Length: 115
Ligand code: AMP
Image (cartoon, rainbow, N blue to C red):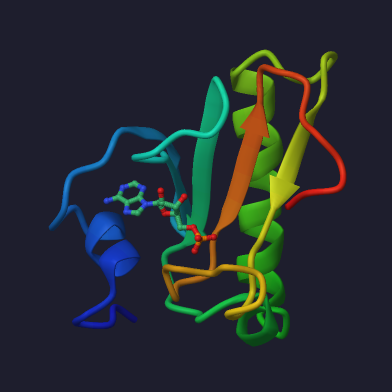
């Protein structure tokens, strides 16, 4: 189900353009507009969930998104060097788009702890 005022619903339905890497019935993956690493891809469910707090009960969406995140990392050649999956949930975490997404980050040494 698409939400009228949701940016990522509009990307999933191709109303707003993005650079897609992978897509299936339940999820899609596209490059972040403001990349923080050589690979910075967002993986989203096509069904609208606000964040992981909302999505966690939807086992199909969670499994499809996480598998696609793994497939993006493999396609970007990150399996051996490593990569990080990030999901920000709510204001303290800095979530800025309220459609659940997983950031796939890699291609450089990533610092820890995050800011
Ligand atoms: P978050 O802050 O965790 O909610 O992540 C939202 C991400 O969406 C940020 O990394 C933004 O750079 C990214 N973003 C915002 N608008 C777009 C867009 N039109 N296409 C691709 N990525 C976007």
